[in-house]
Amino acid sequence: NAGVTQTPKFQVLKTGQSMTLQCAQDMNHNSMYWYRQDPGMGLRLIYYSASEGTTDKGEVPNGYNVSRLNKREFSLRLESAAPSQTSVYFCASHSTANTEAFFGQGTRLTVV
Amino acid sequence: QKEVEQNSGPLSVPEGAIASLNCTYSDRGSQSFFWYRQYSGKSPELIMSIYSNGDKEDGRFTAQLNKASQYVSLLIRDSQPSDSATYLCAVSSGGYNKLIFGAGTRLAVHP
Image (cartoon, rainbow over all chains, first blue to last red; front, side):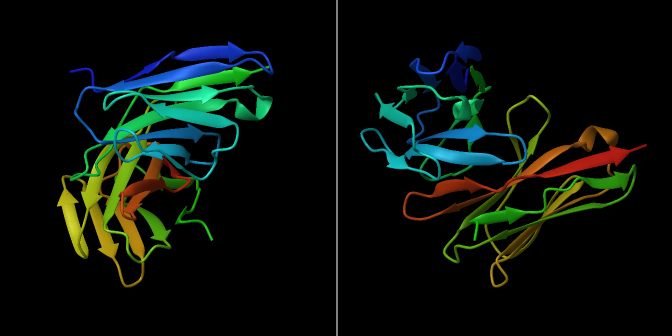
């Protein structure tokens, strides 16, 4: 039972580089999320997707793009990384009927 | 005003005491309410969900919801050092049941 799988677990980028964080869930969930977590800030919503083919901005979308490739996968792209994007990123998912969310193990990103 | 607010703590309680964690939310249309526990360096894990006014008990945990006051709380009875973690309040609202988190309260249980 894999649940929610994020890759990579750790990444170091140079300012201006781009990268894509991958997330996949095997629970047939419609809703998927990307959050970032900084010390003392809790989980801040970057983007979410209520269903395949739809995405919406959250609280902190600037500097990010997302793609809901299919029902299983929801990727987060940093086109030009900045030190302010140094954070831990979590992907989560839940079904439409039950909003109890499951989380991936997180991606620790450092931008230097 | 933030959508979901929590006192950041730290909340320090002695072992065996009751820990009380509080959360307020701004969207009166919110329907679902959750408490997650997060150990340092780990992912959040769901410990309680509550959907209607009143209390819901699960072992040493009790969640309380008051929709009129837009207030959710979590009580942890007989607190143990292993309960030391950050507790995140989450609220689901809107047409797509978007899940919004508070900043979390750090709980420290000392022997």
